[in-house]
Length: 293
Length: 330
Image 1: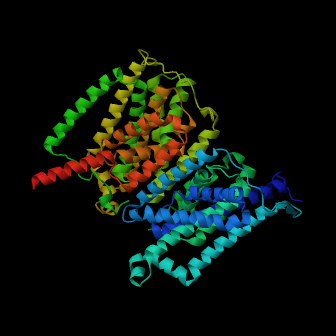
Image 2: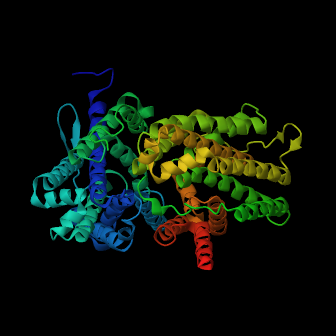
Image 3: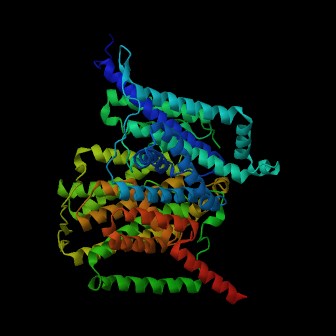
């Protein structure tokens, strides 16, 4: 029907869909990073490892407890979030009065520990996870696998629900207030430390949920997180961490750009996001949705 | 990074008259020990420690004295290693020219990435440098002259200035020692110059440094390029020692390692990075057989260092000495 620069539409839309899925993971992870950074002032380097733990959680629940994908989709994020909250209470909490960089270094150390433990136990190569939604729909111009469609829709729903809760509900208004002035919010009788713990748990849970969704799409491997988190950092720099909607839009947008690069200039597909980051830094240092301070 | 002063340990180095002379005596003693050391200890191990010590010192110039946490220093270390290995092995450069080429490349790369990175502060600076280094990693993975997964192996050591045979470990050892002492003195000089004082002012309070009329970004950029060039010097020297440049040198784990060395030794202290590098390299040597546990142990040290002794070994010792002096003064 329409051949774009000699590229068959199947390849184009296939890569677009892959890009959209990657974008879904970028969006969910950078959203979690932004929420955590807003309240804790910590860049959570463990985020990639927690995404990996979410995927491994699903794999373990299936192989050791016989719990299928749909159960793991709920259970695995809750378990990983609980572990995250323990980490917040025992380790991170003691660093809030210090420079932000110490939080980054601590979570970097934690990421090394987690990745090392999983690599020792399961090796560096990936473990397969069966597709819970086999089959697909023929749309005429392309074949749409059911599971991939599900991933895109599910992450969109989660992202928009998160945006709604933070920007449009009373709970979200407490959260936004505590981001600005935690001391004042505490003076109004709200338990800010508990809110911080729960927020960290929520951000970590988002990462783990992305991990569960990624398990059938990619392989479950101990290094899946550290490879992704650096790209997500670039996404965060591009979008700026000031806005929730900004994180979502940038995440999906960059996923699509990456997918398109794979079609038109495959050699640059692994670096295109970093190049965009460099350009954004030159033109608008605070990020596309960030506010200069 | 600009607001929280108490996190930096060595805000007040012992610069009294007696302290300086004690320092000189200590320095002469240390060099005497290093000159004699290869007769007692395996020289390749010592050379490895000195390469990483120089790398960590260069990194510390940025983190400890300017307050900039670079999460991408592997790109200067590894990039210089690739250029040094390529010019020597393929283009037939002599060792000294190969090292020079590596350093020039690292400085140029430092200038370009520094221009971008200093546009953001604090936590963003760390993320930008990490992302730029990852971009460079992918570039090295795909570029034809890096040898891909194999790296550049069996780089000839050659003869220094065409006279001194570097294939002998002992000759190479004294070259590495000379390079290390040179790099260390450059950093020492930079820190104790008016330039270094401005860097410390930026670390402690950037807005105030700006209001005093300093062009903060120019100072940061010069510090960044200097740090990158010296990291490149360390990387190029490492190529001569191990005759190898590989993807390990440019990977993000290498950037993490140099942070760990500086943190363990004591950031913002002159000797801290050297102690930290010695500790971590020794640990890696002893634990090499443990495979993945090395990663876990490094992570545990990170967590312990950040949670319990943020000043590092040298920083803690300085703090104890100062406490002791304060008590004596009472």
